Each structure stands twice: as structure tokens, then as C-alpha cells.
Length: 453
Ligand code: F0G
Image 1 (cartoon, helix red, strand yellow):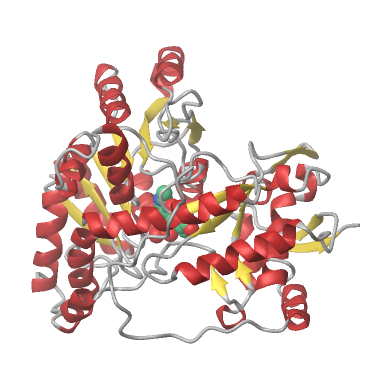
Image 2: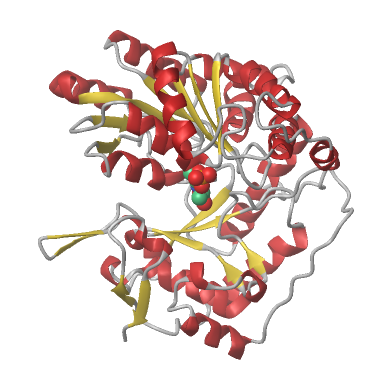
């Protein structure tokens, strides 16, 4: 077996931000104060923050330089031109709308297209995408291809999608491809599957939506495992993918390599006019969306950097390193690993804790308690439901370790691995949780928990 190495970072560190590990006793107090919901922790009380890879990355010197040159004119700023030129080149869309983050793009598009009673079929809706569809009377259905060839476990199940379209053609609102497929492990979608989804959409005259929050990471997997490292221009692969979409939504907080931002891109002129009205009402003038000029300049640079091969080799290599080392110490990690995170199967980690007692939440709390690590539960806290007093669990009980871009080094990853080893050999401080307070949508953000024993 070849030893899995952590790739050397393709950058030097020019500025530092201190982090520290509170004593265990204090960490326990902080957990209680946060009602055992890690979203309520203060970041200064967290040592290694793997809550999300969204908006938590470090910008490059070129991005900071671009920020200083940002043009803050209300309309038609130079920063807008820089952003438009890069986004237009990538997506091939004439109509590009900056927005303050990904869910704003989702909110706007699903307000202007017909969602009432409509079914949207996806390889995996992200939770905000699902919420934006369902809160407008739509139905979001995930059809991931469980038999897809590794690593392309993010694929859409074309056969099942076509079957559903044939059964309910009049009620289908469109197809949605999420690249990479965050909900099912941050796993990529193959170029072949993207083309097949496009053909399916065209055959049935349906729009194809693409969520390209992590398109660069998806492209890396295609380049390495589907195109067998042919060529070295990953931007071109990104361009090809985008050509298949009618509508593109992006949270630029991921592969835009910025801390805030997003975009909505469409080809249809009528749709663009409707979006413009909504954008002006809610986000701002169409040449800035909800963003400052400097944000748009940094995004223009970040989008290009995200597709650079040395960066992606390091980025995916770091995830691979953590995944392999956890697997070596027999932590039940989801196979294969994705592009931005390692997912741990909490139902396997804690086989004695049933889904209705939220094993993922217990594991997430244990990782904080033992090592100051903040992660997120992606299981029945996030996707479980109560229907007529009956508990309906999520398909899987996962804990996600999302790795921020260009922030942590190998020794930080080694700390995470050590903490997992400790948690594995220790009894959990509780035998599960009960939710004592929750909102109807996206409840994981604000729920309160109480330990049950
Ligand atoms: N689409 C995907 C695939 C996402 O992962 C996210 C956010 C969004 C859309 C929404 O974007 O946060 O900018 O409004 N994912 C973050 C995460 C929150 O932690 O995975 P946003």
C-alpha cells in the first residue's frame, strides 16, 4: 500500500490569525451554553473550525490587491466589468446577476419560475435549494445514482429520472444538477452524466439548472478520473460543463474563493427581465447585486484561481489525506471521499444511538468536547421530519468535516485525526439528544437540544 502524503501547500503564509484550544472543562460549559448546537458556539471558542467550507477560505495576494483597486461606483463599475468578463467566459451566459450569496440566487430564480406543485428532480438538492423550492409549493426529489462508478457517486440516476418524467411530465419543473453533490458527500458528477442529463432535459423540453458552487472541485475529479489527466486547462472543462445548463446558480463562497458572494446566470431574455425586477427589489442594481465593487473584483480573480491545477491538487489532496488517515484508524468514513469534506457515518460510529436520538449530533458534540473541533451534522437533525406525530429519519446520519480553502495545514489535520482516535476509544457523554426548540425550515441552524440518557 502506498503511503498517502499530505500535499505541500502551494503557497506561503503571509498573515496569521491566532487560534487556541480552551481547556476541556470550559469546552463542556460552552457546549451546554450553546444548547448542544454548534452553530451557537462563538468562533473564538473553536480550535479547528470544520463547520463549513463556505466563505471561510483565505484569499490570495492577487485577490487582496484586486480589492484595493475595487471600483465602488453604483452602476457600471470597472469591478463589474472584471467580474462579468470572467463569469461570462465560464458560463457562456449573456445575463449574469451578482447576488450576495448562493441562496439569494435560489430565492430569486424559484420566485420567477413556476414552482407551485412542480417537481424538481436532482442528483441532490442542497438544503437551501430544497427549502427555496418547497417553501413555494414545489417538490424537490433527489435521485442520486447509487450504482455510479467511483468516484462519480454524485451522478443523477438517469433511468429513474426519466421514469419519473414519463409518469408526471406535466408536473415536472426541471432538472437540477448540483456540482459537486454536497448532500451525498461532496462527490462529483461525471462529464458523461452531465451530458446525459442535458440530453434528457432536451428530450423532454425541460430546463436544466446547475448549482455550480463547487464546480472547480468537480472539474478536478473529471480531469483526473474520467479524462485521465488529459491536458492541463481545467477552466476549459468548466466552460464545457456550463454550456449544458439553461440556468446557473453559484454560491461564490466556495469555488469563487471569496468570503461572500454569488451569482445567477441565465440565457433566456424574458427570464432575465423578470430576474432583474426581483434583483432590484431585493439585492441591488444589476451591476452589483448585493456586493461591493471590491467583492466583485476579488471574485473575478478567485474564480480563475480555483481552476488552477496546483491549487486543486493541493485542495483535493488535503481532503484525501484526512479521509485516508481516518479510514486507517477505522473511522466509518463515507466512500469515496468528496472534494470539500470528509463525511463520517455516525450511525455506524454510534450503532447504539437510533436516528431519532441524533447520533450525528452526539458525534459532532464529542469532537468539540474532546478536541475543540466544530463540524456539522447532516442527518436527521437537518433532514428528519415529524409527520402526524411520526418520526421520519434522514436517509443517512452523517457528520461532515468541511475543510476551508487554504486555511489549515497538515498538522491541523493531524490534530483532527488524533481527536477521532480519542473519541473512538471513549464513551460518549450522552446517549442521544431530544430537540426542545426548532423552526419549521432549516431547523439545524437554530435548534436547541437536551441530552437523553
Ligand atoms: N448550493 C450548495 C451546493 C451549497 O453547498 C450551498 C451552501 C448553497 C447552494 C447555498 O449557498 O450559503 O452561499 O447561500 N453550502 C454551505 C455548506 C452553507 O456549508 O455546505 P450560500
